[in-house]
Image (cartoon, rainbow, N blue to C red; front, side, top):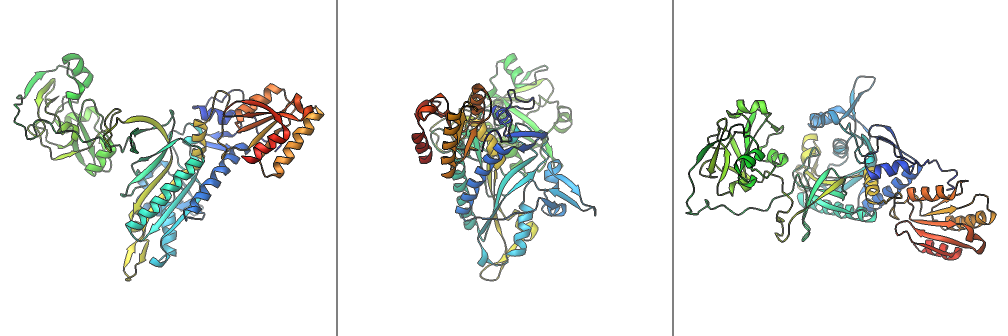
Length: 568
């Protein structure tokens, strides 16, 4: 492609909506343009990168035995009601009515559609297992679309679905997809971690993994052990089991409860500032409501409640922290003075609290707290579990050899063991070898292709611009002809361009009538792996070779430049 004909305009300054380095550079280098909040046009350069990603994804999906199809974007709303996800997705669903007033949604995902399709096509174990995938545009009405391609309302995604006869088959399909995802991200040049994750609105009880691109601007926090392969999203990360306190089977004398005056002292920081009580010695009592129930959860003062873990333990679907004004009615005392002693609510006690020898807690009376509160003596330990976020520096729950480290990550892929969540609700069944009707066992595997493009841009840039991994770059080589009017330069640039294109190598030739400084700046922004500059040394058939990532420059002959590129 001659750059004089390329539909791309570089920008000296990033538009105001650009929030991250990758987002700014994709805009400035002419890869994307915003049409509306969370909705982007991919210009030819961006489309070429996206196609390279699609090629990698297709190759690895097919190598793993998956077959490609294409499902409709418009989905009947009654399918979502049948699966009971219509209300779960809520306002994120983009809805429309046809001329007959039949309601449809623009697909944010395709579990309902693929299950309905397979329900009508497969009825016997003889046609299982099977894995199907598609690459298609998805639609989600994000409340706060941001960071360019990283969180949009319209985006390109690969989603795959496996169908098996039993759990062992699902495990095998899941493992194939897990390894395929690793190969996709390795080939894409991404720095990532596969982490244990929550299944969220997709659902399923068989577990899931997220594939997280490590990046400082990531919205998700991941806990990683540097000594073993443990990695988990903060929502799912486990805390190492604490050692039991002295009250567990010990005869050590424990102090009696002491009630003390704490006028207007409601917070952990106020207790520490006014009375010198360390946060790890405080038992924090928080009141939650949902599904017509009210419960209390107890965590240490230096810990935070993990509402996803708590929701799973309680079985409450709409778990909400009680607002300050409602706490007095629900717990009998104002917020800040609620405590577990004598509290007439179901108590969900975090394991770290259950292991405390004793602690300080609200007294259940305004302006008072209790010292010497002993778990198991002064309140029941009926519901004990892991109900909190882990903290950085805690021991790894898997190997216990190292402290957990926190990193920020961008979710680029998510795989799930769905089990029978959708097949039961939508009636997708098969006959086994004995003629018994059984529900299909499903898995779901998604990777955001346009988001992956954005994540790679976030990880691969410098002060000049983007630096694409070779497998993804829009072109393999960028030839810069310094003078559009110099005959020797034009002839040499044209010769190299022709030889490379005939060899099947993609080339962008900057033949524009622009100053050298403009061409160098644009080349740095666009970020093609190899730049070959045809300048004053053209008379001796020499060119300047530069690696975009390394930055080293070298004057070499034209034939050597061709040989190097062809050998890559």
